[in-house]
Amino acid sequence: MKDAHVYSHYRDTVIGAVVDLAAEHEDVVFLDADLSSCIGSTAFQKAYPERFFNCGIAEANMTGIAAGLSAMGFVPFIHSFGCFASRRAYDQLFISVGYTHQRVIVIGSDPGITAQYNGGTHMPFEDIALMRQIPGMVVVEPSDAQSLYSLTQQVYHSGSSAYIRTPRKGINFRYGAGDEIVLGKGIELADGKDVALIATGSLMVDAALKAKDMLKEKGIEATVVDLHTIRPLDTDLVERVAKRCGRVLVMENGRYAGGVGEMIAMHLAKTNPVKMDFMNVGERYGEVGNLQYLAGAFGFTAENAAEKAERLVR
Amino acid sequence: MNNELLKSLKDAAFEIRCRTIREIASFGSGHIGGSMSIVELLSYLYFREMNVDPKDPAKEDRDRLVVSKGHSGPAVYAALSLKGFFPEDWLSTLNQGGTKLPSHCDMTKTPGIDFTGGSLGQGLSAAIGIALGERLKGQVSRTFAIIGDGEAQEGQIYEAAEAAGAWGLDNLFAFLDQNGQQLDGYTADIIPSIGTVERWKSFGWDVYEISGHDYQQIEEAVENAKRVKGKPHMIVMNTIKSYGYIPGEGVKANHSMAISKEGAEEAIKALKDREGRV
Image 1 (cartoon, rainbow over the protein chains, first blue to last red):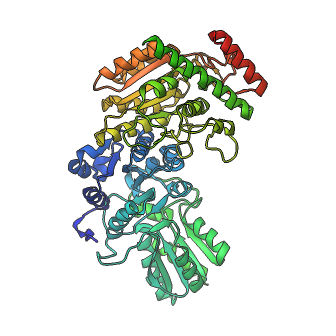
Image 2 (image 1 turned 180 degrees about the vertical axis):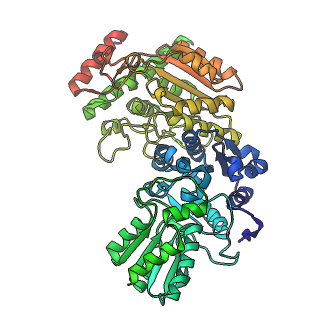
Image 3 (image 1 turned 90 degrees about the vertical axis):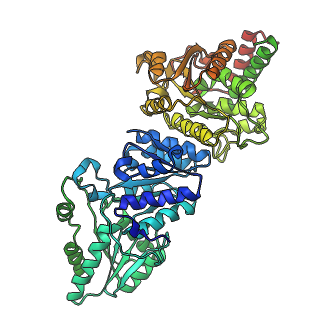
């Protein structure tokens, strides 16, 4: 796999992965909704102008056009901010893409509080739940650039429609080009026996790893899972860590209703009920601020995770 | 249009109408109004204009039709059966559990259906994607789309209108079934369609306004449209909702109607008499 260190932001990484796919596969096309400068899909436009369509600020139409291109045998990648890619164009995603068995790969950028200065109107928390309602839709939220590159390529080869949930700005490296990153298989970053922290996305996986260190100082050994593929759920991994620890904290930069926590709780309710707690935005709407402020305001911090985990154990 | 062709198209339309009425009667009720208003267009497209092969419904270089007003399904199925895409007896399975003919056109179920319609406002966008796909593949095939005047209250239609105009998609031929009625009554009483022709022209389309029940006018508009390059084509068809199902003509609530088997035969006889058929 290509080393993602050549990229300097998540946006370059995800678009770079699509451009590399387009070099090998003539069926790859890209549609944006007037946010190509924000995600950097201008790089795709430059490389393959005839396969790039800027649909303007019209996400529903963009999604429908993508469905039509899919019906002609193309594999469209479409991009907007996660809120518009999911909420604004939802019936089009559900009917024109899902119900018709078309195949579209949606890049929803700036999930949850990573929307920062665009504020509450631009802050998708419920995108995970919405995408989970579309039968067959794969949902990934990679936690670093290497897994973002790898999973973007893997969703193309999976044959499924998919939602790629990623921040645009900043970059983080957790994995190397030689590490095994497999769509549908979460990665255990620590294997402590007392409590399992299952996290999605860079922000939450980072918080989980810090929380693990804090817990260690208190004599609590934590398992940490990078659940980069939200759907389909890696049930083997969830069952294994739940059995090992007997206590599970699910950490997501999203909404509780229909989110990752509910999904895991439902699975464990059937297979192995354990004590659980959840870190998510609950009933709140988003608000404006920098990432540090927002993480504090919503309790998306290592300290909060460690506290919740400790309460589960004690 | 020569008399022989005109007669064959009129015969096809009569047969599609008979099949549609009996099809809906087999279930007991259905979307008769918006089915009957596009029968001349369907017969023209399937028996005169479109390059399709009922023996090979998925052939790559075919022309494609997106019936965005998917509730016209019963008439589309009648036309497809007449064209030979599937046996006529399928029509009596309309809306039955497990059928290949659901009330709204569904590309995953019915041979010959090129895209799913039903959630109104979405089909024109899909047609744009199909037309772009044809262009990318260098195909000379064309994409046809049918939308309704009630459907054109959906905002997505105008997102699509703007994009298709901007991109000059001259392989896209859309028809607006302007029958003046929608589920709740007359569009004039709900949200009137004002300046339809000017509206589509303003989006950069090549626009015609015709009677949707007159083959000469349909042919003239389609042939003229084919000569216009660099613009998508919109043929606004003034039609009568339920045209040819006489018990529904002029009736306010004719979007979906109950039709008994006996009622179907009476209606077909009445149509036969009106058309002077023996």
